[in-house]
Image 1 (cartoon, rainbow, N blue to C red):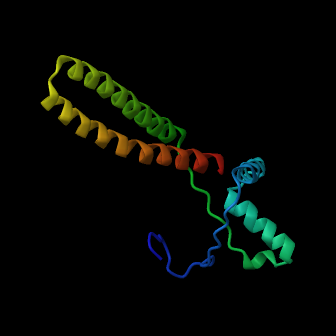
Image 2 (image 1 turned 90 degrees about the vertical axis):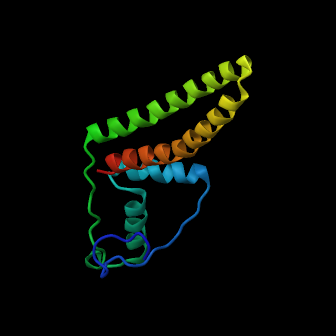
Image 3 (image 1 turned 30 degrees about the horizontal axis):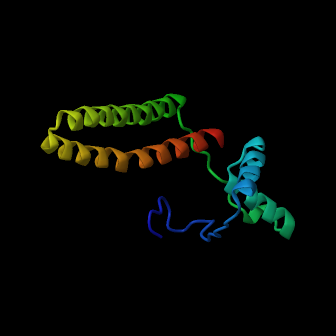
Length: 135
């Protein structure tokens, strides 16, 4: 499988994609978090109970320990990129008002780069936050 880490002989080798409405997803996430589980673990446990499957066939889910300082640092990095983006926007306004269009075009390229980076940082921050919550 692409992106697979660890053993190629996984005990949990199959996946089921479940799409749901945002409200249902929020409720599942809240219940799972209250139970101290990831959403996937909570849904897996529910399936095991509903189907009457023996727990010995369900491999334990390893927990990922994410140090709180790592979460803080990735949050700071995301905020810094957002501030940098805002500063470049303000610089672009000044450059445009000064009529320096060659610099303005370069600034637009910088802004495009910053804007392409920011969603990935936000996603990474959320992934780390969710990993911390599920521990």
